[in-house]
Length: 59
Image 1 (cartoon, rainbow, N blue to C red):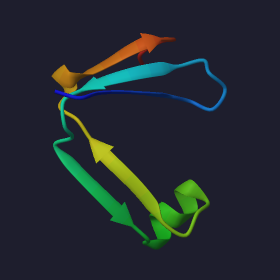
Image 2 (spheres, rainbow, N blue to C red; image 1 turned 120 degrees about the vertical axis):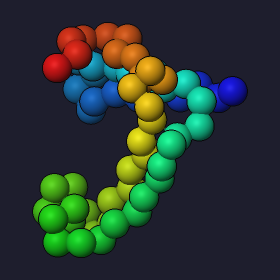
Image 3 (cartoon, rainbow, N blue to C red; image 1 turned 120 degrees about the horizontal axis):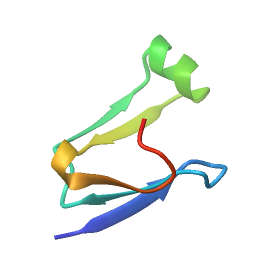
């Protein structure tokens, strides 16, 4: 089983996810382009039980 880590750009929040994602998507709709300020946005979704905030606050 794979574990992945990530966090925000400023380093205030770090997360860890366990296992493989439940879903993956790549989108280029107007809403996603505006949200990410990029021509394409990628996302992965994990089950809540497989997601943990390891630094910072969960909110």
